[in-house]
Structures are given as structure tokens and as C-alpha cells.
Length: 616
Image 1 (cartoon, rainbow, N blue to C red):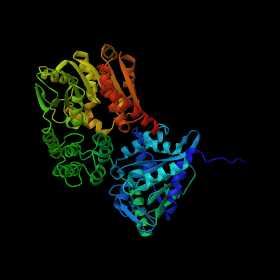
Image 2 (cartoon, one colour):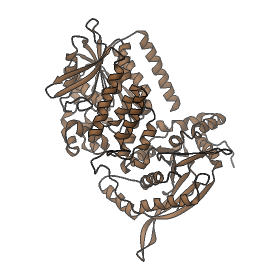
Image 3 (tube, rainbow, N blue to C red):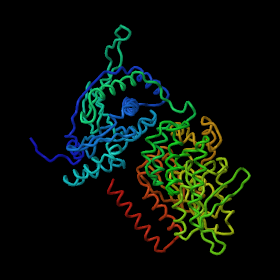
Image 4 (cartoon, rainbow, N blue to C red):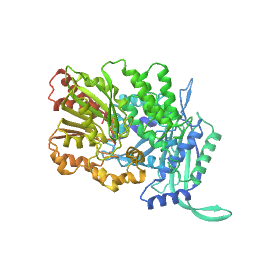
């Protein structure tokens, strides 16, 4: 017999169990005929797609919870309890992980799951279940709780999970937990939410259909509810609706009406809301039900929020919300109006800064528009060209324009061909656009000393341009495609739909044929070896858009290369501050700037690295 302390890895579980002691759990269960889902799952597998049973339950439960707002709620307090009802369903699911040799339960949250498609839900389930629990940034809080002393860890857990206003994003609005991988028929559990769904195994059992007995795959579906929030009748209605949704499942493939997958939009826009410091985005996303026209649509709800900010005189915040309304690209009148309002409000805001001007460059195939700063007939400054990816408009770089001046440089902030006001087509020669911009300001800036801060797909343009235009002295980029993305059809087959649709729009092609145009766009090893300038690249180990092979090509063939790697997805949303500071520090280093600003940026970057390491 041995007696020892509870392993640190299990501390978060103990904190959780302590918090749910106030629950009043009541348990219900039913049996679900999973025949239609089994058939859909088999058909998807034949097409090379995989959907787990858990994914189908999350899909159906998110929609059922949204239809039962009384259950999509949380409670706090004993003497004077308060209940919050959430406008959006955030599905928590649990998973089995081994951490430092100790088997533990971890949980993750899929936000706005009521509007997420099957493919997006599965992508997130795979992300959490297949990822390394010791590296995923979303599990940083659990890692911190393990290290803290017991008293501090318990207090930190309470401060994180108790507030009602943030409960949806920290705990979820409902939970799904499964033991279906073993011979377990029923599983009742309390997941810290008003409603918890427990999944047992799916086994062949006799069912009665049209008066005859047959065999069908049956799931024992268990529902535990907190009696303090809802009563048994409401819980029974919810369980019945969920059973019917699973048994009557229909293929939810999005986009048949020509619109975007709203769930995918919500997931991918989160990185942009974080980077742009967009406020109240949770409230806006919760109101969005469709990508069609009218109330509850993507463009309408973001625009409504933007107009309210504009009425309050918050022009830059309004501009950011208008930017989200036209995300990911203009595909109709509503998003076109949002883009027009983006430019209009930015133009009003920049009039308070006399050093920000508008540039328009007409070329044979279209017009390039940019915002510029630091241009002067007297002092000719080095140039920094700034551009984002396939969904980023130039107005999103407002803070960067001011930062460029503080670095003693002139700046040109523009956008990819086909994005925003840029009417050029996106093709293999799009890189020439950067040279034309430098030509346009050559009389007011030192264009012979130019640098490109070009993120994502515009990073590819900058590298291609640097091969031909010696005025570009360095390229700083993050998540830029190099070659494999353009040439590997197997990788392209798994690209997010939003990426494929946006590329097709920029190219003026049908989504089904756009990727076939790309193979000749890649940069060969010989071209990479011909780059004599410094290249600074931010890579993400779990990038779902840029293949790791592209990063390897850079590392092997570029002479002067430095790579910052994050254990993150495309855009590194969990490492935004660290990435920004590293790119600025890299710019100062390649320019050999020794001014005090270099020391400040270097210090801030080191602090960001330490915070990231502490969180990880």
C-alpha cells in the first residue's frame, strides 16, 4: 500500500469538482437510432472525409440549445442567485490526454457551434484531440494551474470560471462528454454547465420500425441538467428535440445557396477581431444566423454595430466593424456598402492626421490604392511597404501607419490584388504591383532603400518582387506560401473552404477551377537561392493553410533566413503580440538601427517571449 500526494496533473480536475458541488443534477436518458448518421458518415469516408460521432452530436446539440434559450444559461449565487441566458451556444467537449505520464481529462470549447458546419466542428475536434496538450496555447491555463500552489490554483480557477459574463467562453454553455470508445452504455456526468450530454457506445440493438423488429446502431444518450436553472419538462423537451435532430439528420453541406458557411466565417474571423482589437464581437457573432441578406445576416449585424459606433464618434472602431462586415470579400451589395463605409470612416479618421495621404496608382489592368505616411519633398526617408493577406484591407493597418513614422520611415499600406479597393486581378504577375507603388513615390521617398512587411499571401508577392527589384532590401513575412501550397493537389484538397472561395474571387475564377491555375506560381529552390536579401519569416506548426514543406524550402535554400516558429494555427492568433514585436525588431536589425527605439522593442519582445513561455 502506498499513500502519496495527488499528482499535479490532476489538480485542474479537483478544482473543477470542488466548483460543481453546488449543482443540483438530475439525469435523463433516451435511445437514439443513428442509422442516418452512420450512412452519412460512411458516405463521407468514401469521399476521403472523416466525421466523428462526437462531431454529429455537437452539431445537433448546438442547434438544439439555441432553440432552448432557457437551457442555454448559467446560474450563480445562493442567497440571491442570478441567471444569465447566452445568445449563442458554446459547446464544450472533454477528451482524454496523457500529460507527464498521467492520464487526465481536458476540455475545449467550440464557440458559436449552433451555426458551425460539420467540417468546421471536426476541424476543431481534431485540433484539440490530436494536438500536444503540453504545447497547445488553449491549454496554457491548465498548465499554469498545475504549477501553482494549491491555494493560488484554486483561487485562480474560481476567478476564471465563476463570472457569469464570461462563463460562456471559459466554461461553455453546454457540455458533451463521451466514453463511447469502451463498452459503456450509459454515462451520466456533470460538466459544469446547465446541460451536459453523456455519450455511451453505439451498438447494434433491436428497434421497432413500422411494426417490425430490425437491427440498428443505437446510441444511449444521457442528459444531466442543473435543476436550479431549468425543470424536468424543459430538459425533456430539449432531449426529445435532440433525439429527433440526430435521427432525422440531413446533410448540412453549406454553400448550396451560394453563401458562405457562417460557422466557418465565425471561426476564422476571430483571429482578425483579436488582431484589430474589435470590441463586442461576441455579441455581434451571436446575432448572426445566416450569410444571406437582412436581419441576422453577417453583413447586416456587423454593419449595425459599426453604425452605432460611428454615431458615438468612434470612427476607427466603426471602421473596424465595417471591415468585419465585408469579410472575407465583397460578394454582393451588402458587403460592397460595408467596404465603402470602411474606406469612408477611415478617411474621416485620418483627416485628423495631416501626414496620412491617399495614393491611387492606375495601371493597365486596374487601380492600386494605398494609404501613405512620411512622404516629403524635403526629407527622403526609407520606405516600408505593408500589406496583408487575401482577406485583409488596408484600413486595418491604422495603428501601423503611425508606428512607421516613429521608426523614421515612410510607409505605404496597401492590399492584395482583388482585395478592398485594389481592382487588379490576382495572378502570377501580381508582384509587379509593388514595384509600381515604389515608382509612384520615387520623387518623395528613398525607394532605393525599401523594405516589405508583407503577411500571408502578400509575402509571396514580396519575395517574388525582390527577385526582380533590387530596391527591396528585406522581406518580413508571416505565413506566406512559397511553392507546395501552389503545387500540391493533396494539400489543396484540405484547404478551408473560405480560403479556396476567396482565392477564386481574387482571381476571377470559379472555385472548382481556381486552384488549377496555381502550379506555375511557386518559387523554385533556384529562385530562393537567388535571394540575397534578409528574409524573416513567422511560421506556425499547425498552420491549416500553409504547408510545413514551404517553411522547410525557405530554411534550406534562402541564404539569410531567420524563422520564428509558433505552435499555433494560421495567423498565430495566440501569439499576436510576440509576432508583431519580433517583426518590428527584425526590421530594425536588418536596417542596423541602433536608436533607443531598438532597445525598447527588443525589451518588449523579450518580455512577450517570457510571458508566452510562462503561459506555455
